[in-house]
Length: 74
Image (cartoon, rainbow, N blue to C red):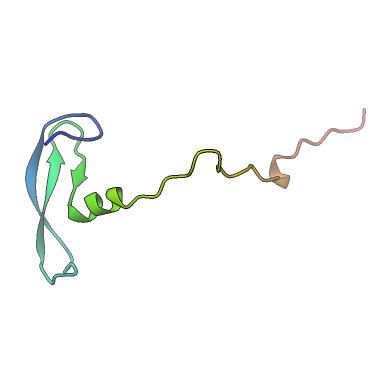
């Protein structure tokens, strides 16, 4: 398996968990040798279910008073 972040080689890793949903204390994940990225089953599931903004439907910038330019009297 190759890393999605840097395309480096990944290896299996056993990590301690704080009693996950199945009641296990240990779980397994992939870790990249190059960048250290860790990917487990929950991360993979979230990446598959990730929603992306639709084309042309980006949020409009809103007015922020803190960014307002104030011109002094000359």
